[in-house]
Length: 211
Ligand code: T5A
Image (cartoon, rainbow, N blue to C red; front, side, top):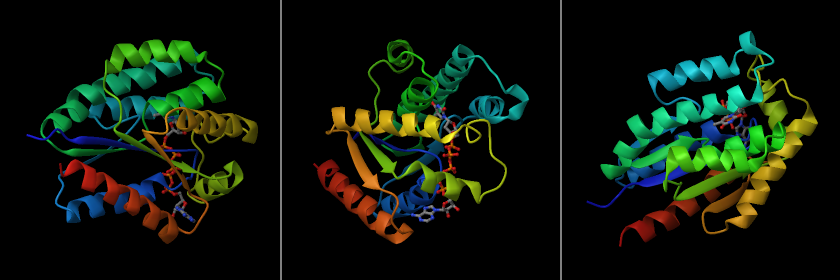
């Protein structure tokens, strides 16, 4: 059996990940793929409980080490229960955020040394990395304005603009360092323009995976 594909969509708040992931799922299903949509933190019952702890204001001031370990605890569960089995069964996993978000938010945003994140990444993931990461990039202010329309801000969305500028910078740096795995998409454009580019990228991937 052909192994599945692991595709991640990531980016700053309000970049349009959820919107584009829905289109991507439809597109891949029309192309005959079995799709598993999922997200981080979350994706499992335990992971969703951890997500609630991480995003809730009940734990404002959570220690950075605690926050990072909780992200990776949710990730370990997610990989074990959802991602690895789906890939082994030949499915396409479409994941809303992954480890790049830890580098960007806990590393860039909060200042955790990136080497510490790398240690956890190696431990939890072994050699599992996304086949493709779509970085939806846009000015921080535009993303925050979009996210703000949705209502109450979670524990991360309450951070100031400079935090998200650091987050965005790390995402862009990681994409630049790994051009084979990342595609940076200008997400400041209207939904349909972003969708067209994302689908063109997927079409390319489908062609490659036919072999
Ligand atoms: N986190 C996560 C970490 O700190 N470390 C980690 O390791 C991980 C995995 C939750 C938080 O967890 C943090 C980062 C996050 O703060 P989340 O819920 O996935 O993660 O993150 P959010 O960014 O909060 O998700 P959002 O739902 O805000 O953003 P999306 O999914 O990027 O955006 P979407 O599609 O919901 O769109 C937002 C609004 O904009 C509109 C939509 O209709 C919607 O109203 N929109 C557009 N408007 C105009 N033009 C476009 N092109 C648009 N696309 C969407």
